[in-house]
Length: 228
Picture 1 (cartoon, rainbow, N blue to C red):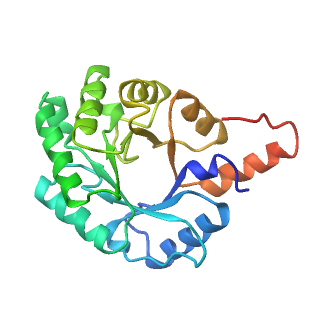
Picture 2 (cartoon, helix red, strand yellow; picture 1 turned 120 degrees about the horizontal axis):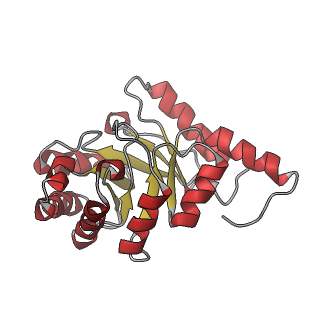
């Protein structure tokens, strides 16, 4: 620890019952583990990053339903950036995607992009398990057209389920290498992480990072296979 996998992880705490002390502990753990970022709720901002750490701060937007208006999402993103967020993980209106209104999805993303321009990184959560393959492709293209930096599989809160290798492969085939692909939701083991990276993920949303990376260390003491 840290490992190559650690540098792909957004170390995540989005439970509604999370406290300020929980987030402080998350940040300390992320800095120790060497993860890329922490991912927290907007009400937890501002946060204090340990001196000398290059840890980034990602914040969710329109989370978890995506059913906020574009104006509300834009205001939420702008406020988060003003309070120190480096990255915004926004949820699309999944119902609009299911209805085939991909122009509306693109406008929604573009509103957040305008409110949180570069160098802020914009990730677009598409809730891939709720979409057909054609919808995943169309929404991923809408995210790219709207100026997003990443497409992301899941909130982790939707009943349809978790990230899958198939969804990651499809998203990567549609937008990589121009956009990154974040696999999030159910990525719990080192095997899960490696499978998602092999499928095309360039970032991972993980809440149990310590256990995952401890398994990496254990493997490293024996016959760990290099490369992810």
